[in-house]
Image 1: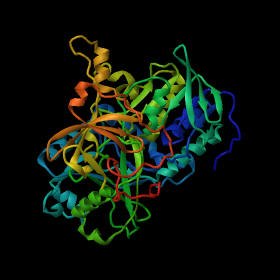
Image 2: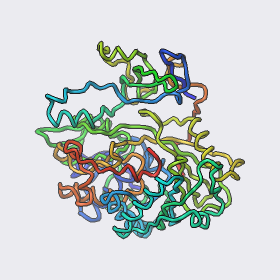
Image 3: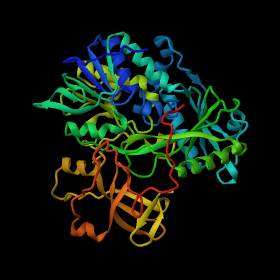
Image 4: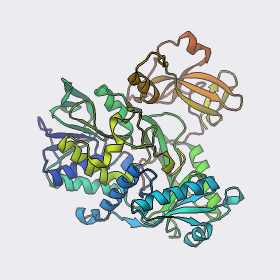
Length: 395
Length: 124
């Protein structure tokens, strides 16, 4: 599927750290849209082995801030024809997405989000309990009697996709256009002279380059240490689990902020489930039993008939969190060092638009207009973006 | 369930505790610059390592300080809250990134028999 390169070249026009969805998408658009093909993507593990392969694959654009809605909606648009572009089946499946409201205040937030969404042309509606029951006939509307469902934010374009294929597709598209993907190649240092990037040190030797894009999710703070930059990013694990495959019965994607659950059923019949972040900083991906117990109990509040269904496996990823729940993207005080980070628990859906906007930013040296709300210096200016209200599960 | 040893209450499940973030000295808001203040308010030492952290045992409302290696999830020591005012010793004992050392088990280790091992590291 990919060309194997036995050795690194002495230099590249651009070096991208991290062969996840974001890094590979940036490489793909650099080569396709900007004609920059002398690019190396360096990956310390294997392609798509980080958060690209660990998320719960939900794609939506029903965010709260204008910056967020515009950005994610462009991503949703880019998703539509990717499969054709890559000649690869991404199993992109529009299902409809319910964010359940169990309280009056949650209902008020749903109306707010629906209005912001509609203003920007995104299909979202605040719907009542009867609408939810029609859309998800098997749900216990009382949720075990202690969290009755009052309504929901219904987002029709909400979708799921096969996340591994996204990384493979962007990787193949970039590879065919001359981009070199080097797995098992760890960046150990970044050389900066006179405030400018001049190259990267790797476990396979030094590479000269004037431009470095860092797209490493939970490893961002470690890479930032190499260029002496400080950010608000802190790392917590985020866990998820899947059930054994069962007959298709759940068409839409369901999120409940009060019950800390999001769930969808894959084309294979497995239920993919996630919850909120682990409660304290940790840079390890060993999952816990508490997580399975808590999440399973909340799943049973909504769907008691699942009590006999087994959990097949669980795992964790490292989420790079920011205080305003918006990413940190674009140029940095180090010339030639570009950041695509702070993607915490919400990065998968943004993969295409991150690739698109970061490739523009790297090629031109100026931030793409769509990422102006996510700049590195917004904290020093005390101008946060405040996406918290739209985080799918209370973070 | 992971176990955390509270200096007041002894070994308790970690779900009884709230994490209060890293212990960080505040600059004087009357004399520091806007840049120093925003650095204090927002920026964090995000890389893994041995860090002093605030923890609270919720049921008893008891705040204390934990020195913890955030790469291995191993508690290296606990301190009373007063130790912050008196000056904590430099944070040491961190493993280096990617260390393969097996975390020791026993009191003070934030991992226990209830923790699953051997997860499949792929997602659906």
